[in-house]
Length: 237
Image (cartoon, rainbow, N blue to C red):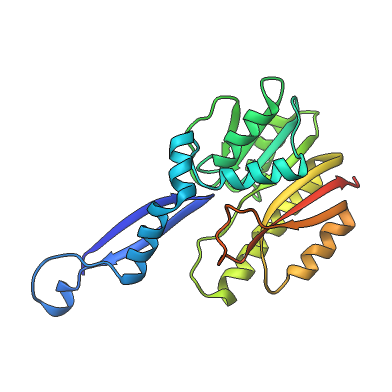
């Protein structure tokens, strides 16, 4: 069986669509046929108004507008801040962060995927739960504490909630642990969260660590998505 693999960067990761040849099953012809689900996803993606807007505005993903909306509502950033962006690739959130903190600020980003350079962003490729990668991030911070930690991390989704939600919660817990390590007292943590099993326990953990925890659903987030964004302010240290 022949396979055509289409890698489409979206948000913080890569959605891999496996497209196979029906000819190898029927023994007739040699054309490649995509599933109807794949076709629908591709059409929806490229017809999406936020995708088109991101291409016009020069952002690397539609996810940039989620952070822009959150910042407009919750005033996350100020000039000169130190920001850590977890799960940063392809860089949409880092682009927004570096715009907001300006030249006096610092943006440190990390992802297991490669990310093309962004002016003003220090990027570390690797899994920050591994000590060597964590050490590199901490070395970039030096003796500073982060003002804001942001995370748009998500696993590659299978479409099976019983599998996807625990994976997503695992990533969010890692991001929260990282924020608890590097934030200054009074700092801000913003993370994508998927509603489902473990959500209430996660909220309880956040409320123990932050003075204010609110859930947001930006307009640029797809309505059918289970994702929400937790905006946590006033880190207790």
